[in-house]
Length: 99
Image (cartoon, rainbow, N blue to C red; front, side, top):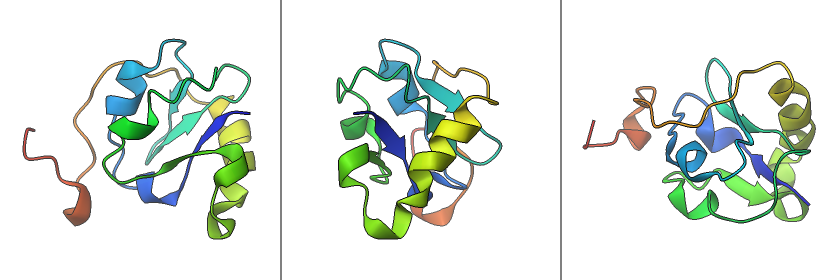
């Protein structure tokens, strides 16, 4: 099993989840984050850190976002590791007042 980042992360890209990942499984795409499934250790530390509820275990991804399982696997291999908190992208429903 691995965790998967889904559609709600697009154009939001909070990075609190990446900062708590103990194995650097998160990758940074242009408009969202991805999880490298071969690195993820299923610790569940990332999921509570996501304010837009974009992270799911692969077996529990809502059917509308099932394609994100393969998207994470493919795009994470071409994206750099992210392990620090960065300013999120600007999107009305995911603005962090702390930034």
